[in-house]
Amino acid sequence: MIFDENKGMYFPTEDIVNQANVKEYEKLYKYSIEHREEFWAEQAEYLDWFKKWDKVLDDTDKPFYKWFQGGKINIVHNAIDRHLKTANRNKIAVIWEGENGDVRTFSYHALNREVSKFANVLKSMGVKKGDIVTIYMPQIPEQIFAMLACAKIGAVHSVVYGGFSNEALSERIRDAESRVVVTADGGFRRGKVTDLKGIVNEAVVLCPTVEVVITVKRTGHDVYMENDRDYWYHDLESLPIASPNCETEETDANDMLFLLYTSGSTGKPKGMMHSHGGYSVYTSTTHRMVFDIKPEDRFWCAADPGWITGHSYLLYAPLINGSTIFMYEGAPNHPYPNRWWRMIEKYGINILYTSPTAIRGLMRYGDSWVTRHDLSSLRLLGSVGEPINPEAWRWYYKVVGGEKCPIMDTWWQTETGGFMITPLPIMPLKPGSASKPFFGNEISVVNEQHEEVKAGEEGALVIKNVWPGLASGIYKDPEKFVETYWKKYEKEGWYHPGDSARIDEDGYIWVIGRSDDVIKVSGYRLGTAEIESALVSHPLVVEAGVIPLPHNLKGNAIHAFVILKTGTSPSRELETELKEHVVKMMGPIAKPEEIIFSESLPKTRSGKIMRRVLKARALGQDEGDISTLEE
Ligand code: WT7
Image (tube, rainbow, N blue to C red; front, top):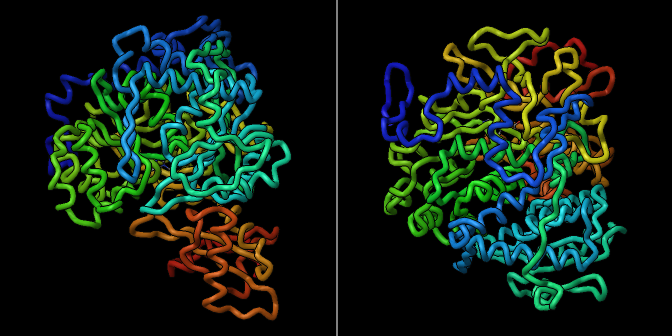
């Protein structure tokens, strides 16, 4: 790339532009806005449909939009089946490396066999179209086989990130009313064995709907298996029922594909629903255009499939586009901080997509861990999950990308299914800005009166249109969907993402962060209310208020203000105990950085904790308008 010092921008070289799948932004953008439905219909033509749609967008039941209404499609038919009839059949679909050095590869042909076997096993356990299967697994190939197997037979997967605690898992299984849970005995993380099956055993005690638990053997450590409930996957797989042939179900475009729980401003995680049609179109289009996908690409999305990034860009979009995906089980610095770079060199990875937290984490070990490896296979880099600070951007650009790889800083959410704000490889880049709206999207920053703010001013990010990747709703809670995303701009019909941002004179969008009660810690999304209720569930805690404070590595860290039961005195031990209590209730990602014992919490007269005031106090800043404060 070429750096223009005056503008502070990085310009693509001719090479990058010449080979790009999309060579021009403005014109296509204009077309995609003026002819939104035609644009998306054209993109949908890249996929194989059992039956074409009757209507591109059905908006009769706003905000429950239906894309490609009347169409029949299955995401697995596009991600696997159709490749079997082409030269992709013998191409590597998945390369997997375990933390302990195990390597497994699967061609599209082999992937189809594994997924079909898993699908037949699920069927033999009575899983039918529309049933929700909960998947709680380490990052091993069977995790994605299980997801694809569900989709193949028209069942719905609900993947719960393997770092969640038994309480969090149990709550999600109960909400989804899963009858079948798929797990593994454990996985390897930093050289240790994680006991996933032990966590599942505890979780399902509180889940009356669970009848079957299928366990994949990964680590071989001793686990408790209950008669008539627990089955080893390798036992089932060796039975005649697990045939490698299985018909792919012809699902409706708007049939549910998966449920994925995400945190919001209330204590209860929301099950976001995505469906086969619109999601397939949106994820594969964004992936193809933004990551400039070529048939020979080896694409590595370093996210866990337990998050939306993993669903959309580790699994579905790259397989739809016929890429070779790379998947790694463990920690980035195990056994040494060059683990990632060694694997990029070894497998000749072309595109790396990761988070600012991971970049900052690896940056601190110094350049020589990276530069001793030949990373010349890399062509493009990506970032997601939180704003990337310019320092981390420059390091990623210079040391990892060798000053030749454009960085795609993609802004999106679990709810949006795929990229909403992103550069394209042909665009000049500004470190720290997610650049421009993706095709079809009109994005603005507005003030409290819903008027567009001036260039450079901060305000609320709004999306003024709908797109095929948009979630179809919240499982079992349609009102919550309306209230959270559509109420605020009801009159205008805009989508409310809950982020604040500014747009500069060049139309570049700079996302600042969440403006609601959601905290991004290391790119993970957590609700303050969830952490507060975890704290309050401890017998010695009466009340808690949680805020994010800036953190060098994690972006934000959790700071909790806690009021103890009268007669209890604060202590170091109690601080540790409370932190561990949150880990037990939610999982290690929610562990507070600091517990501050307080006598009172700033509240409004209606009793709402004023987190804004807590934050200002903690940072020694002006508390702002505190006229509604009741103290
Ligand atoms: C929130 C959504 C979407 C995949 C991972 C996160 C923040 C995401 C960026 C970015 C600045 C970003 C936003 C958003 N976010 N990407 N490139 N720059 N902020 O999905 O867990 O649903 O979180 O992540 O605050 O609202 P999620």
